[in-house]
Length: 72
Length: 390
Image (cartoon, each protein chain N blue to C red):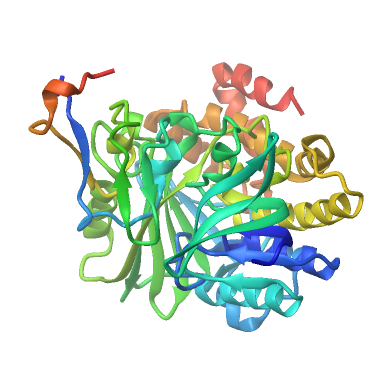
């Protein structure tokens, strides 16, 4: 079991394809042409986006604000 | 800012077909495309059936990268089975194709704007009345009688308008494709590779584009992939199968692989193409589906506007016609996919051997099922579920 944490998108790896957005149940990821961002107040940390990213660009960041975030 | 009859969000084949048809019927149409350039990047394997596309539109030679006359399926243990001959196909140059479709829409009178990022829908009394957009960095509010979401797999139009159209996990396959050069392959033959080690829960494709170039890509089911991503599977395959090839491009993407959503229209809006999951769940094909839906949606939207009724009830005519024409086929394919996805590598290897015992010219769907099912009685129950529901 991994620790809870905010998701982090590595924009060097990201292809801006939109798969994460298509499965995000919280509408927490915003994509423009080559700009991607996470609305952390909406993210419920289900981490589906991590499993579905074709290129492994999304990771959990266990070090930031762990004490304020609870795993769903 | 000018008010339009119709705003189409997204300038892929579904969006520009909708725009062209609606413009031809006399509507004022604005197309807003998020990207700076139409058709780029290509998030598609680019294959279509020859008859399918010719039924829809006059085809220009410049769109066609390669004519396909043959397809081969490769079982997990490497047995090659030629499949159903008869139908020819094209591998398109999507960059050229998408641009040509947009050009046809523009010629018909539609106004197309790129680098136009739609941020939300404008709603009044539960009715969609337009969109908010950032166009070349400036925020705008643009009104229209009908908004059409052709905004792809990552579609937000429906969600913003209140539709519950978020895909279940099992309804999306993440995909990755490379454009490889320097390949020694049969240029007229598409090849599909199956197997848990190659593309778990999906398949891998090799679609030739002529001159030793091909789209090589795959879609996987992450639940069956044991924590590995599409990149891992594609890299392993390319290293093994095409060592020494060069990669001229790479794109990620996703295809929907689920049944038709309950609702793809609402008060003042409709969804078309990938945004409406109008993809064959078994094959992942969506170009022609999107164009067919675009034709229907464009016509229905214009009629509804002329009658002054753009309610969900009126616009749902589009969904009904679509479902009769293609949607129900997709649902049947979804049921077949569910059966096929239960096959283990061992099952697939056996099936490949059985298929080889049928002469190639007789390898149609019926013969395959007859042969396969007689040898695997447990599959009859699954097949009955699929075909009993015609």
